[in-house]
Image (tube, rainbow, N blue to C red; front, side, top):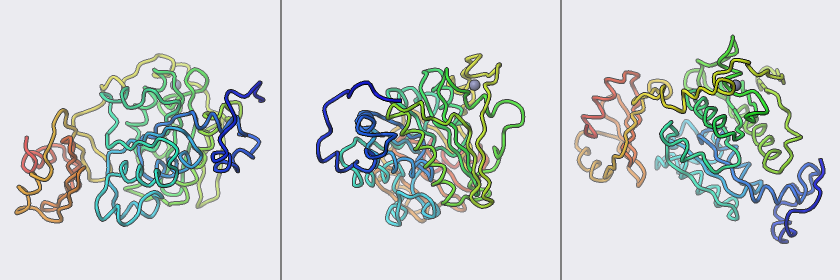
Length: 352
Ligand SMILES: [Zn+2]
C-alpha cells in the first residue's frame, strides 16, 4: 500500500530523531509515524500483557494512551509485569497510577492517563469511547466479552490477547470485517484454557511479553494506517514446547454478538454486585460511595494488621483475610470465594 500524499507537514527534527528507527522501517515511514502520533488507544487491564503493551505503544509514539486497571502492585507481579518495581509493591500503588508515572518518564511527548477503575457495563461506554483502538490486558473472560460487546456495538477495532502458564493467544477483531471473540469462543469446543488462570497454574514472563509484542505489532499496523498488513489470524504460541500456530477463524453464522447483535455483557445481564476475581478473591462493587481512607485507617488501626494506606487505597489484614478498599468504596477481599462472607466482612470493617 502506498500513500497518495503526505497528510501534514514534516515532523519536527526532534521527533524525526526520536522515532528514526521506526521511520526507517518501510512498513511505517514518516507518514505512518505521523499517524501514530495522532492516534489513540485504550488498554483494559495493566497486568503483565497490559503493562508490556502500554510500554511498547508509548515508546512507539502513540499520541494518547489510556490505561484502566482495578488492582494495585504486589510483589508477586514483579516477575513478569515490566513497568513496576519493588517501591511500587511496597507502597501498594495502584497499577494504573504506577504505569502512568513510569510511562511519562519514558516518553513525555504523548498523553498518558492511568485510571484506577474496574471496567463494567455501567462505565464501559464512558471509559472506552473516543479511542481508535482497544487493547486487551485483562485477566478474565467476563471483561473480554464486555469489551467485545462494546467494540462490536460501536464498530471499533480491538485486539484480544491472553496468556497462562507458557501458552498464549492473540487475535485482532475488526467488527464488520473479521470474526469476533464470541465467534471464536462461544461456539463448539474452542474454549481452550478458559478455566485455567495465572492464579491457579502460574504464568511465565516470556509468554506475556511475546503475546504483548504480537498484539502491539498489530496495533501499530492499524494505527499507522496499514490495516492491509494485518495477518487476520488467531496466533497461538507456547514458549515452553516451541509450538507456534496461526489459523484462520471463521465467523459463526449465528454469532450472538456480531450476527444476532445481542449484547448481553454490555447490557449488564451478567454483572452481579459481587464478582470473583482470581483464586480465593471476591470483588465488591460499590456505586456513588466516597470513603475517607485515612479516617477509616485510624478507626481500624486497633483491630487489624499489615496496614498500608495511600491516597488511592487502604489495604489491611483482618484474621486470615486481606482487604483492599479503594476511595470509591470498591473492595477486593482475598482469602475467600464466598460472596456472603465477603459482604459481611465488608459491612463489618468498612460499613454497610
Ligand atoms: Zn461474532
